[in-house]
Figure 1 (cartoon, rainbow, N blue to C red):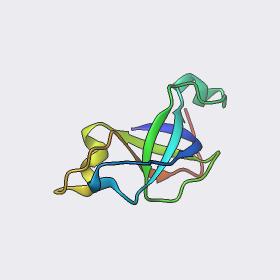
Figure 2: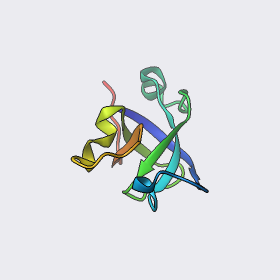
Figure 3: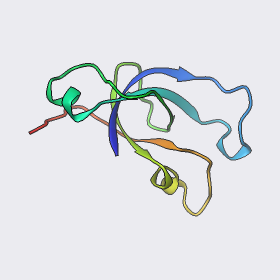
Figure 4: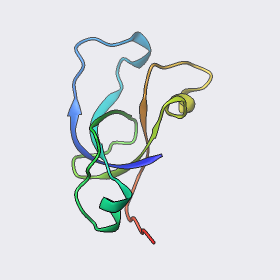
Length: 93
């Protein structure tokens, strides 16, 4: 799981039927160094499925790979990144 900042949303003109109607975000992940120094996110942008209503500028936790599809088990969905939670506070020690 990684921490990312939402920078926008995505509108799909076509998609797989199993993911029709979901909300999609663009998020930029943080490295540990960026989190420790309270810097801007410095990772590569991700397209993230969102069911929680995250907005621009909000920090979220993102699950990726096979774990991203687990909230839909036993149904299969072709997703690579899922917004697992909305973060209020981040403490890095």
